[in-house]
Length: 109
Image (cartoon, rainbow, N blue to C red; front, side, top):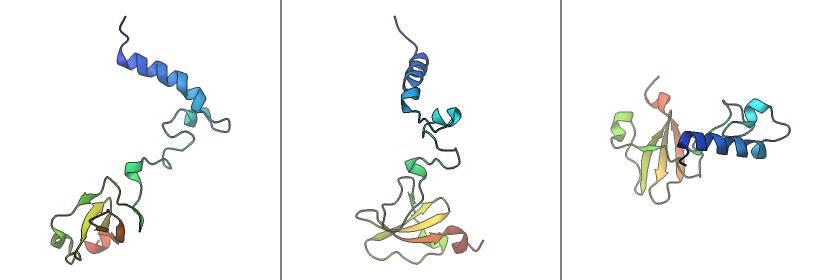
């Protein structure tokens, strides 16, 4: 007998949710993907903010035309990425964030 994928997923979620729930967590939040985190607080790894010295987020997009943003040429071995409302100056070798600039300030907004 073949079980539809949606039904199988629902059964698995129902079986694992109680095991993952914390006792001090409200029932509505216990069922969330990130248990016990309100929706505004929970961020997936792809949505995490950039930090100096940390690797650039995977969602950061390389900037091909830095002059369009009013940026000077990146120093040798570095490049620019855009992530949300930020411009990141990043090391090309290991993607370490070296500087964080405000996109709004660069565009004069």
